[in-house]
Length: 77
Image (tube, rainbow, N blue to C red):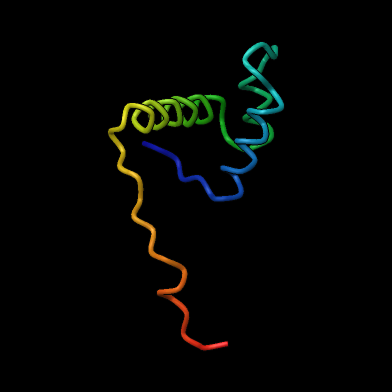
C-alpha cells in the first residue's frame, strides 16, 4: 500500500535528494530521517518519481493547458 505524502514531506524529500546524492553513504537512511518515512517508503517514492520523469520526457504526459491570467481577472484597474 502506498503511503500518503504531504506537500511539506515532498519538499523535504526533494531537498534531501539534492543534499544526499547517489554517492552518499547510507543515502536512503538519511533521506528517510529527514522526511520522517521508512527507508522502503522513500525508495519507493524515488522509483515513482523516476517513472514520472521517464513518462514526461518520452512525451506520454501531455502538457497542461493553462488559461490566460486575464481570463480570471474579476476587476478593472
